[in-house]
Image (cartoon, rainbow, N blue to C red):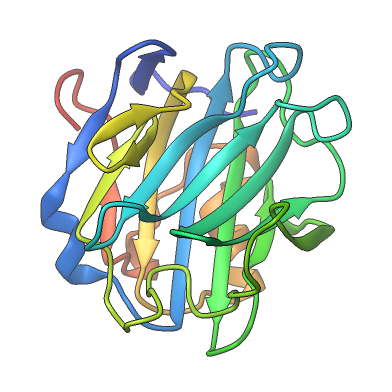
Length: 219
């Protein structure tokens, strides 16, 4: 399975990468996200860890991609969460998908207005469930990268949640080959991005944003 010399390493304390320039490439109801994730500890830490997050204009509006570990029932699962003040929705895999110190390919595809993201693990559709965080509103299905006002995200962060500029739920582990498309990839294209468990050249898929993380410094 996946092996690469370089990747972004995060200590789970204060490591993060902020990317404000990505915001103009995202928005709308047709998007795809793909990345390789290797958590140090998949379950047992007792804390969720955000490996990607996208913050919108406004202090408490964001979409985040998370390794869940805050409860026993949800340990080592992959979750996407959208939060806009009191409104929160989530899409979470039914089964655990992450293992300690093991590379896992994740993807999410949004294919139209009022549709929930399709989650992929290692090139295949993953069983997943939609839900609301307790005590919150019912807003969901409005796009991975679009809030209620139709705005796209203002910045991207790798390695934690960006909560009003504050770092929360930091990720401990490695993240590599992050790609984003302003269109919904097909199942066959997700399989190409997965590359059979090995690093893949996805230039033929024309990603809108692609961080290869292969230069030994920077991204």
